[in-house]
Length: 326
Image 1 (spheres, rainbow, N blue to C red):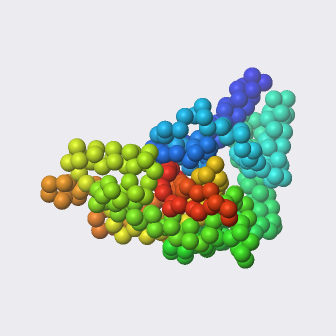
Image 2: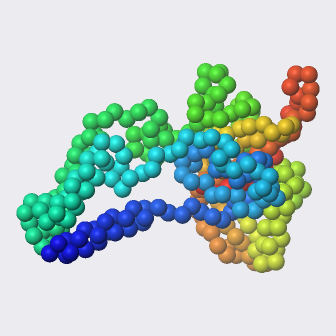
Image 3: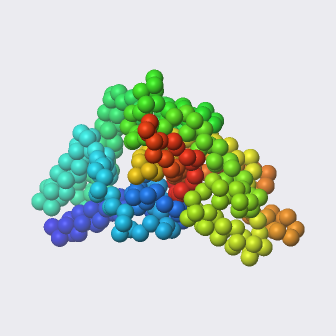
């Protein structure tokens, strides 16, 4: 009987670990390319627009040996999520289950029930009681300010930014020059966010028209090379990417910093567009929905040069430097 209980306990623990592993999903790995300077291989900070994992840069001329690792920029370690949550409620459930397992191993059980049916009944009772306690505790705890950012309507979190309005999510409040919790080392202004939104439309339109001259003028040489390669591949396949009705829905700043005479800004953008692939000869829709408008969230990095001068120098125009999927 003791060995039987031991085997059942081991199976229960293995099942719990399997549930934990099943909750972790891999981040999207494709469609991320370009350069973020020395931060190319670091993960941008999460934002209300892109609160999840950002796909790592996979195509870049920046060598990993020349870019410092993420350890070079100290970040607060995120608390590990337990299967039952953190805090008092999680500790309570873990304690009850550990106590139950010890009781089974000692031959005492949780309530004198025996056999497999009894074990399942005991585990079910413990889980039910603890889930009830956790729900009551969560209801009694006040929601901190700022929680729920990026959640959908009806979640109780902050409302998303108005269409095309960067300031609702990222502009410095009350002229302070900085957004709380956002690393802005160069002091971006409203005109910079307007430039980012304008470049979103310009670059998408240039890709749709296959206008390489406009792409070259608004991207870094590296980014232009990647986008030109995609256009060339479309020609070889006999298709054309048609993008229209591009509209920024929500955007905010992840981080902005300076490297020598260059300034970088990484922003998250959720935008709507009509994106289809057409046959070059007939104009027939090969993929995508010509009648529908889809949404996409991406993290774009822009760069500009700043000329030296007595008052801090004159900044050049922003250009697209990297795109990452979110």
